Image 1 (cartoon, rainbow, N blue to C red):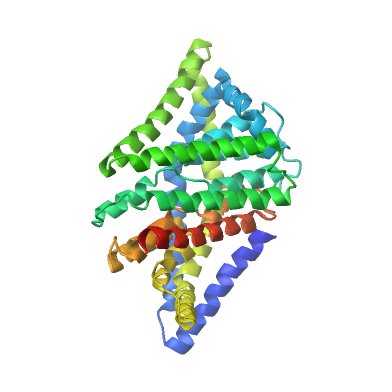
Image 2 (image 1 turned 90 degrees about the horizontal axis):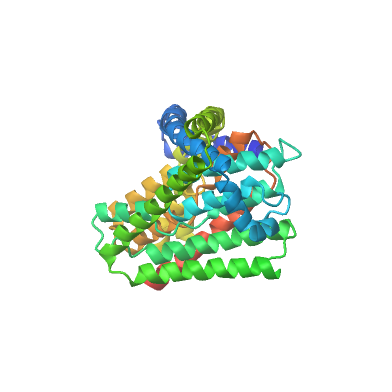
Length: 411
């Protein structure tokens, strides 16, 4: 199975590269670095990821339960049904999972990671209930996960904040390139999975929805790009968090109006959030430890050095290679790629080409392997089929687009 191969290769490649480091470069600390990294990553998986997620999961799972009892999720499902019934043909019409998925995509779009994860895990559980072969990913789960992992974030707030901290003259100058790169990744993931599942994207209703969504995103992009730079951060925070709070209140108000036992329903849903957080711990530990070994072995350094040699040999501009560690780490480790982004800005400057490109890389897609471990782990799916290849294809197009638009905007 794919996850078995991924796990084996991560440890195997790390071991081989560590031997090369020891035999040919005399690095006597390399195995200690690997082992220390394993212990640190195991701790991080539990203490910094799973446990902090528990409270957020419990709250938003409770809110979703209130929304379902009040009929709000069913209302969302009914509105989005013409689009999702064609994109997810295996999911029955008006099924609540349609509403859960749209809430996940919306939270992702608004850059609200804390809310997107509980909504997404709830949607994945709903899709698993419909899955006839419980240990194998269904078509609907693959489509959902690929769109989630490549899903566009409208305003990359955390990246802009990091740029401001490190003294960028215009912290928001990566805003448009980030959105262009992540949109290209999303469309690639959608096309890849649609081709595998024989979904006709040019079917009138589906094409109309995709065109309308693209037009709305373009309009929002135009609006924010026309604002003064200092207003982008202020309005985006107000826009994102205002929508989320209004959504939460609307669920509670609808439940109150329909005389639902609001707090009892919330507690019932919150229990499910706690159980999900505990269930994903073994999957997170296993994947994050393997990723740590790959990262600490030094394999990425060898890849980047090889890329520099190849680019120099071809005689083309090699400035993009200084930002490549961020791109290479991004599919496997969100925290690792963020650290590389920060290191690139510190080394070359936040307004350098490499500094800006590393930020665009960071904003171009989600962390594919982490998302696979988290979401499939929550429902105990072991055969992920072609999810990884679709996610990596989307990520590759996001990387290439990031390089292209960065040369266009900053080159």
